[in-house]
Image (cartoon, rainbow, N blue to C red; front, side, top):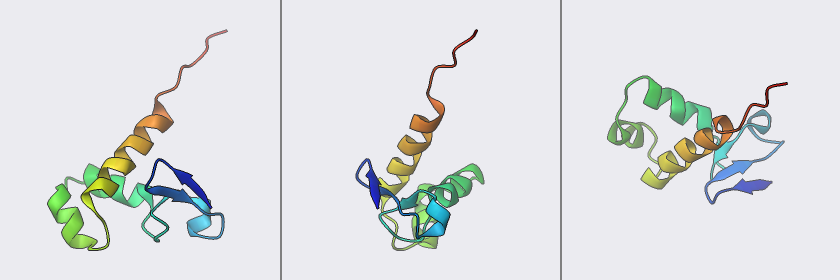
Length: 74
């Protein structure tokens, strides 16, 4: 299992190797989808009681790290 930041885990045996929150079956994309749907942090935490506020921050930092890369032009 690989640990990214402190809260994002990647395990090839869980959720098809997709990034998850702290080894649980809560995928980063699930958290991001809820945010994109307009749910507040409080609503997400109510919906997923095992989640912590810092997990939402970690999901956002993880997503940012995936899209913040230079594109080289030939």
